[in-house]
Length: 85
Length: 191
Image 1 (spheres, each protein chain N blue to C red):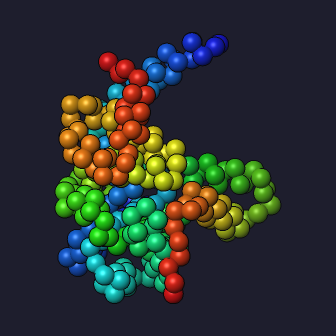
Image 2 (cartoon, rainbow over the protein chains, first blue to last red):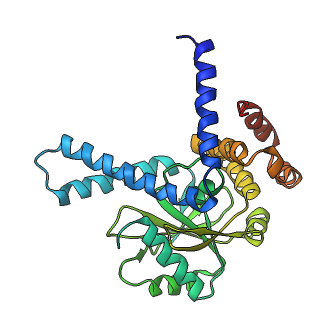
Image 3 (cartoon, chains in turn orange, blue):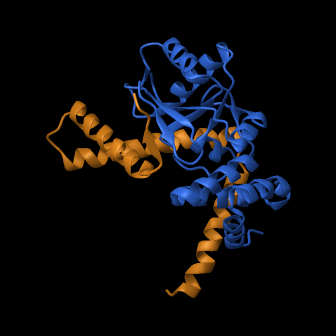
């Protein structure tokens, strides 16, 4: 499949996403944001359980928080400067 | 404390009870107008000084912990404080309303949206103001999600629903008009 075939398919998928978003109210779209995050957390926990089968739930939660913190640091790199205490 | 919905509701209701003017921005406000995406925090702008912010945070109780040290957001010079919610992975970030002209304008124009899952009405910027702010952020930070948010909000809202004179006014102020035009041109035909 070359780019000429992929572009119409990608455009159709995008148009479908837009149609589905338009069918929701503003409040429903806001609600989905946190729901998607909670779902992603579940998948991250499943991944950590597979990666560290001997870890207990508390240890997995600590690792999860560390990873989330690292993601925030990457995302915010160069955007914030610590204020002097 | 169960999840991000509850954390957001408790924070918003506390600020409302204390008569602190506020507005939910960031990922939650982008979601109000665009294609839903996950967000790991609630960003809230507050029209208060630092003392009032710390007093308000104390009202939230032991489920919340406000970081003592804030940080400057480099795009508008806004001061930010992390409000941690130790029992859950979701976080809240509190921004003090800055003197930046567009920050002031979007705060004045904020509007009410009802969120059933959060369980209360929240104040959010208009779609136009989210677009203006996201363009600014993308210009500085080059984060793909900010560009995607602009694209998605324009696509979902539709050309006719947006106040382009208002958007163009601020884009001229911020030097983001070429970026806006490029993003608009990239949106595939939808109908």
